[in-house]
Length: 230
Ligand SMILES: [Fe+2]
Ligand SMILES: [Fe+2]
Image 1: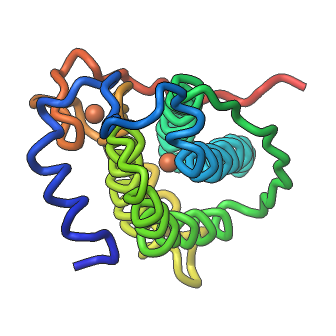
Image 2: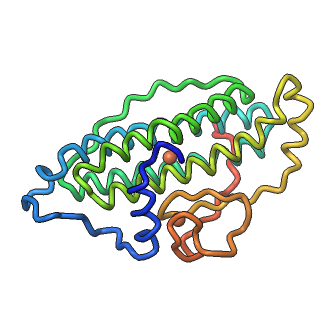
């Protein structure tokens, strides 16, 4: 099993379909959530920052892919940028509900050619799956803010979807990226993102969200991006 604890998996398995988003585990604590959830707010700020950086990086990758005439790859990046923003918005909302504030995100974008951007995207997604979220989830256990834990699990699972898709495309992109780009562009992609959890799928949904279990109506179709006029 990955580094995510058994406790979190157990919690997620039993609670996801039923748990209302606004409920917190108070455990008979202080009335001021800012005091009870001091560390949770700090940890969620880390997650918020990471998701905003990912969101903005993908926006940069979209532009580059379009300029390099890889519309399908740009479309995938667009879906991911949308998903990352949902994660960031979820953290911002929880932090605010807990009486905290998000800190300003300083982003230094690292945009290269599309081949390199795909590689970077795969690395970053994998890092979040293996290190970043398992560590955050472990740290969140001490204050047991259930909504924070649940949303980190949502993000962790969404990143697994992203990494799988990037790898699927990246495997064609070894040393002959140019010649296989056409193949990628022939792929029939139809991206939809769940507005609750950021779940990202590349076909029209026919069942409730595989991550948060919400109904089909929570999926939003992702439009194909176009180049910004300068
Ligand atoms: Fe994310
Ligand atoms: Fe969902």
